[in-house]
Length: 349
Ligand SMILES: NC(=O)c1ccc[n+]([C@@H]2O[C@H](COP(=O)([O-])OP(=O)(O)OC[C@H]3O[C@@H](n4cnc5c(N)ncnc54)[C@H](O)[C@@H]3O)[C@@H](O)[C@H]2O)c1
Ligand SMILES: [Zn+2]
Image 1 (cartoon, rainbow, N blue to C red):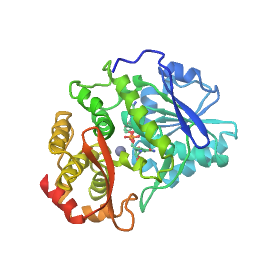
Image 2: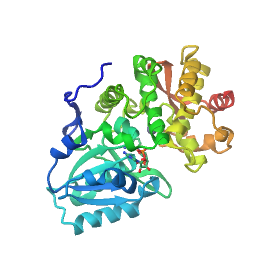
Image 3: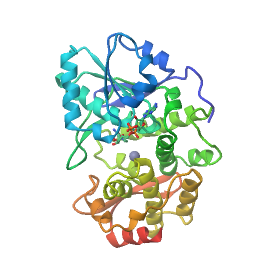
Image 4: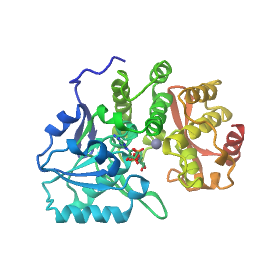
């Protein structure tokens, strides 16, 4: 993987209603290409770090940072703000922030006047490699995460690596968990290349790694835009356990941390079921530890953990389904996994 060139060609992502570009640019280049009188939703941290760079003619709304802003209440406030600020059907709404802002602003764009132009400008590593691409937008309900949402592809995605320079380190490592996930499930070369890099927000190799992740995600969502065939579900490696861990710890663990522990457990599960080559789990665990990510959590023995997995959106008819590695760089969706095997994998760590 070569370091990215300044004007590398954008990636095109096709979907049922057309296509959009993912552009890799500086913030100045990205802003130049957008309408002078755009609307933007951001959060207070991103606004403090980057807000002064936004064009003077834009209307900007900031929400408090954190998952709690992915609520119906904030969504309603954003929609009212658009109406009061004079947004019309020709307006562009820019989601300028991490995955929380992307999901919230994305849903606002989908709902306002039955849909206005959405531009994703992800500023966290997680949002750049994952949530800004693929068209899923949502808010949480008191009953659960992402329960109200839509498939709403953006008009364009602008990835400005420089914005990561102000991202807190813990959030950067959090995003790295998803980067490792792409390596484990789809790209052994990526996983092995990363073992020799100590990635930081200003690493010269980071842009090419982000781009590779976006390529991998785009290819999967093109095959299964609406998450119906099972293809898109392979992206859930580490997430069946990870989501359950997030729930039983009441979101005390960051998403990437929970997913890292989940990947360690699910790699063990793959070996126990005879789905993965011997040694896969050990490679996953040592890699995650090397990257500074957790592979164990005290809540792995929590009695509500397996019941929480059974409540996962990916669960069908009370059966546990997992995206499991066949080896590093390859995976498949395995349905009807016996509960006893899951419990054995949890005990193994
Ligand atoms: N739509 C999808 O396909 C999809 C996929 C994965 C995750 N998600 C969602 O994404 C969300 C998590 O995203 P996240 O990890 O980006 O969380 P986040 O949006 O809360 O951002 C993490 C933290 O970093 C701060 N931040 C972001 N960019 C910054 C910057 N450049 N400088 C300084 N601080 C910055 C934010 O203010 C926040 O405090 C979850 O709600 C999850 O459900 C959606
Ligand atoms: Zn994730």
